[in-house]
Amino acid sequence: MSYNIKVTKVTESKVNQVDLNNVAMGFNFSDHMFICDYHDGEWQNPRIEPLALIPTHPAAMALHYGQAIFEGMKATKGKDGTPLLFRPDQNAKRLNFSANRMGMPLFPEDLFVESLKQFTALEKDWIPTKDGSALYLRPFMYADEPFIGMRAATSFKFIIMASPAGPFFNKKIKLFAERKYVRAVNGGTGEAKAAGNYAAAIRPTEFAKAKGYDQVLWLDAHKFEYIQEVGTMNIFFKIAGKFITPSLTGSVLAGITRMSVIDLLRSKGFTVEERPIKMLEIVEASHNKTLEEAFGTGTAVGIAMVEEIGNSSMTIKFPAQNPVSTMINDTLNAIKVQNEEDKFGWIVEAK
Ligand SMILES: Cc1ncc(COP(=O)(O)O)c(C=O)c1O
Image 1: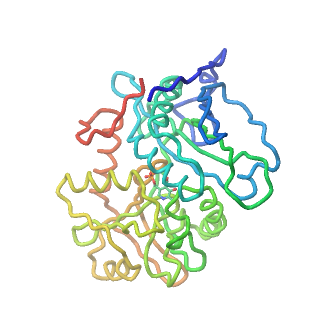
Image 2: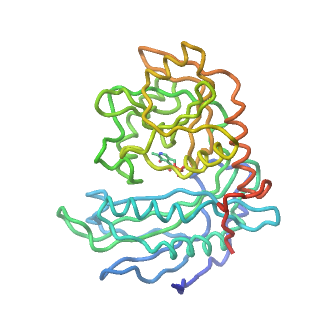
């Protein structure tokens, strides 16, 4: 279907007020936003406008009952300066997976990709070009119907906004193996990108940081035996030459970086197993000296190498060298800026 997206541009861009080569993600926002409204059972009035405050009724249902979901992706620039997106079709699918779980309307996947392309093309001057930098894109949907009562809302907004982002973690990370709080249970909302999941993780993450760790390593909700994921990343271990990552069994977010890294590793001849992983297996591999590497994967971070996993009863140190993780990180970054051939067809030009 073709959509008519009405575009109203700012009279003067703020891009010159920001040092794009020296920005931390999330503090600065680009000039425009894409907005679409859902009411009377359909998405209406897709438009790009100057970024502005949105009047919100105090009874807007997202504020009370948490019908709010989001996506995260990054735009880069190719060799000739063309703005590029990474697998936007996968974000469209995941947004709708989340929408379905949270009782929210699906957003047309072709409009999702089309609006991202138009929005990114318009904001191309906001895409930083320094190594590891990108324009972070934040599509999100929330219930804006004013109503007090527990049911699915009938009116929603879908918005895309953007924030220029430098490299995220520039050091190896320490993970706190959490044994009190949990992120997700099977049948819960952990495999959706629902705002409430992140709210529940904030306190435990603050506690972990206060103990000197960077992120929480989430374990299963029943016995704290199985590894789920880490902070806002999926996790991979390299043990005795093979890569292992927790399988998607209902409580892990299906990361787009995760699925890309699995394909990349396999294409380079590595074995990747997707299966349940016990914490004990990592402890034993450490004792046997077969624990080789570990890294988190996520859009915001890319690949974050793990230095240590610990809590009050144990500490696992990882080897200092991360040759395969480094190679995968470099390859992904090179594909994203067209310095390496995109054999998988992941890159979409935002023209
Ligand atoms: C809980 C969680 N797990 C994993 C990921 C990694 O997903 P992706 O690679 O699609 O960014 C994210 C980030 O979106 C996340 O929030």
